[in-house]
Image (cartoon, rainbow, N blue to C red; front, side, top):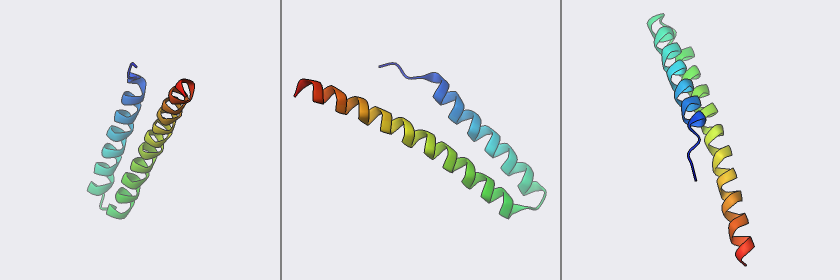
Length: 68
């Protein structure tokens, strides 16, 4: 099974943008908004990962159902 590199680049892009916005907001003195942005970025990445794990488990389930 090949790893889809687009997913990795998407997650890395979200991380970079989130870190950049967090740094800018923290330097402006808005630490509470910066923390909220970091939390939102983490939640987006978590949703992406959970979605792909769900697809992986569905594929594994289909493989074992065919052999049974």
